Image 1 (spheres, rainbow, N blue to C red):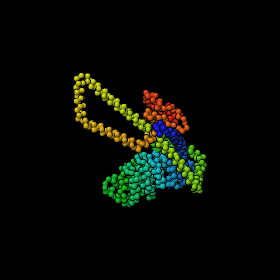
Image 2: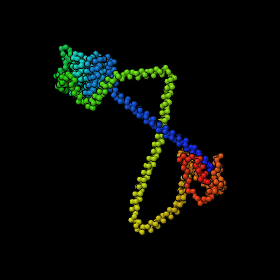
Image 3: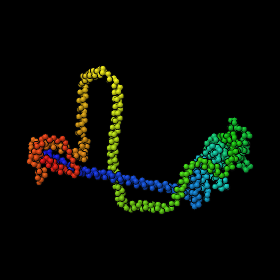
Image 4: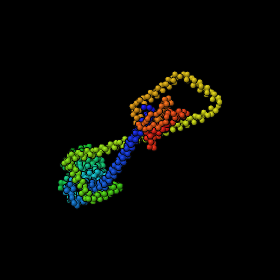
Length: 590
């Protein structure tokens, strides 16, 4: 096979390979476009479903939470009008003072659990008073709810006698007043009464007096310690009157008010400011905590009397409500109003949605039952779902790889542009330095003597450097040349270079380069061969008449010996294939 036949073979091979390669590239592009469109549609659909679900949840969320809270209270036997009153009270209280209406209802669950026998509007009244007191005293709702249960257990007879709803309002009002008077908190007051228990009530001490004593003690100690000291005093008062020979009870055996006991002790021991007096009282009452209470309260009996009177005058919820209103945040109230509106609307829509929800639940139960009845079908469906997800994952991965490649190319472009920009800036800087140096030396070089001296010095320096460093310079140049040659040999001999060269050869640019290179090489070889051998071109196709004139290409070339070919371009566009190009080349040779 001569050079011309090799050219024809190369052109035909390129013609056969370029078409399928182009089709593969087109199909990959379409696949990427389809994957991107599919993922975009999936994202849009998922976003739409998420928006609908989130909007529906946001709208129905307060109603769902309220229904759950009411269900908890309903489990304690609260039904009908009482439950409706509780719900309305929760909405109005949350709007007036802020907070969650559903949490308001949940607090009533604890109250109903702690206080048996509440009926009618009593449960809403207890819950409302607890919520207002918690807000007004900056306390946790759960702590105040527990406090209400504790106080009801202590003063149950008083509450039953005056009416539970009225009593709980009075309790909330007195507690709020005590918090304000003694600079304490609702939590501390709750802790003091929790530690005191029913000890004072069993001695006939009223709620206002107990609250005043505990509040006064909290000026110098915690609520828990105040309850402990008061309890120690009450536990030892009976023994003390026998030991001291003093009367601390009335004719009916009930303990005298604290102010009367303190006046009697003051009359006998004075301010209790000696060790002997303290030891005697501690021996009489049995505990040092009781002595500490008496010393502290004796310092200001007039203030204690005023506190008891002020607390006794509080019979309603007004003080607590005023404190809560001053603390309430308008934005929190606005949020509570919006939540209450959505809750009421959602509660109206729930009867319409509940049948649909029940059908969905029934559908889920049916699917579960089918999976148990038809395990083979379940496996098939499961495998189908996995296959779908696998295909989605495969296409997504392919699109991801393509995107990474595109980003890498874009990043490379950015890096090149950035590098060019940096080089431009450095070049500009170097030019600026050069210009400054030139301007500085301009005056110096204007003197002719400077030129002569500089030339002599430069010549001497160059000659001396070459003589001194001649061996080093030649060795360095030789070493650098060897490194460049070795690096080039390693690169062209590596597998990566060969693989990359093979891949690039099938791109449109590579195929065109092959054809051009083969054509130029062949034309040069054919010219030399025809000049030396002067033979006709062989028959290219079986059964096709040779259309070359006698002498072939060589005859033509001999007739045009002065012609010099600078460049040969091969353009296979426009529908011309490799075999047509070969025929035209043969005809051109004729």
